[in-house]
Length: 297
Image (cartoon, rainbow, N blue to C red; front, top):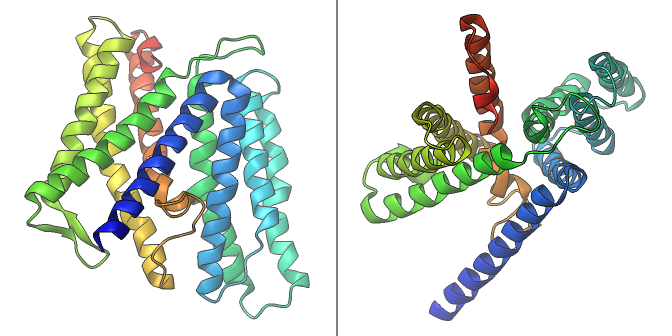
């Protein structure tokens, strides 16, 4: 039994290290390698999501919604780097409404359910990855603008710090269940440990991105709090979906970790919330006449 546990731990550790190298390499190499990484994560996560839908008795399209999601990702990248105007997003409208038209020819007994799953996948998965891909390009205004991946990596590391902190604190001190109906192992003590680690990493990155700027550290500490809370909710949402379909893992794409959704569930839900957090802060800065550059490290 112990040898099996050791083997599983080794597989999980090696695959986790490999995943870390891939993510770091893709994000740091160039904006285009980052875009490819986001495309792979989006496509894999959407495929797993629609697998859950099929286990629930629905029959959503798979390939076409993935194409819509990848198109949204490509358009977000192109618009943010000045390669096309924001009006290009209008191209997504006929693609999305074609989901309804497609049901005319599929003859499934629950066409509305199929479309709801398809739209749900686009909102729940495609939108966060498209938003995440624009974060290193937030200062871009032309095709030749610089690529600054620091903020994107910071958000990813805050999510991982939250996971590690929650695991360690929960293992050592966990007594009170956080959401036993959905995830019996999660505890309030683990949640607190995760929040502390996430806020600490946010604070350190804020000081690094804005040397000696306490306000910048506080801004990113707030981001750490937002990411930690939203990340836990993301984990619970994905657990709820899996539990409803009788699944332990969403897939087996990442040895020792399960599928794409298992590994990136927290990030998926954290991104929209932290994106809104920075957008609100930037808007407040504009209203007050202050600088908005602090939002992007």
